[in-house]
Length: 311
Image (cartoon, rainbow, N blue to C red):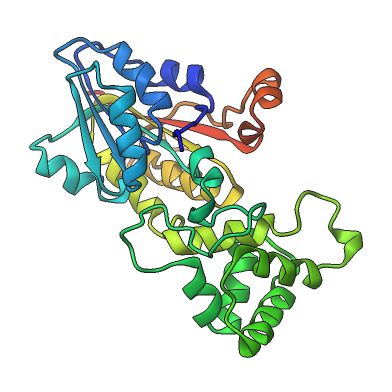
């Protein structure tokens, strides 16, 4: 299948990165190179783009799309390990980093990946197919209480406990192997009157995907690492697609920006707080009405920008 991925908030990201033609930039979620193709266009031969993705199919597609460019480095890895990746490349700091969190259209459309609740396939949901943990293992082996917590917290699903209870009941009869088996359990767990706001399985599938790929837990530390990897004046741009991600990024930015805790009536600061830089946009940038109409995935997208301190 061709790796199709329409980049969300593309113009906004390119503008936010303030690309220097001889700079070094990292796309930590390379995907189909939608954002990267625009970044690399603005780089000179002295500039460099480092593309990271844990999906080998994405890397393969990106290499094909960007084959005319000789200043791109492709890394099969996780953006959570950005410090180590840059160290291995003998790069201390970069001019900008972009993270587009979430699942690509390709991953959703490729049936055997098991991300979609619209196709009947084996439960998988791994972004990196070399890892061992799959959705099948989560659904069939996690204790009921842990399942409920994951579905409630990562999916913000109000019927999480009922869904978890019914999953455990069903797997005691036979293993839950496919996406449609899981969808049917979810449908039976949610009252029909409450199934009007989108597909009933959407929140649970999101939650399981986040658990399988460990998307939330390391996010704050990843933001911290990314900021430490920026040069003075360098920018970090992160696109999130649900409230848990957005809250984690927002809090990490606030922590990095720091805050003076001195009484307001003091003429100067004595608390000695440290700031890594500044938040560029207090409110997240969202997609225009036109983009939301053309690309439904952009409806929940939020872009937050952080700039490293300049001395």
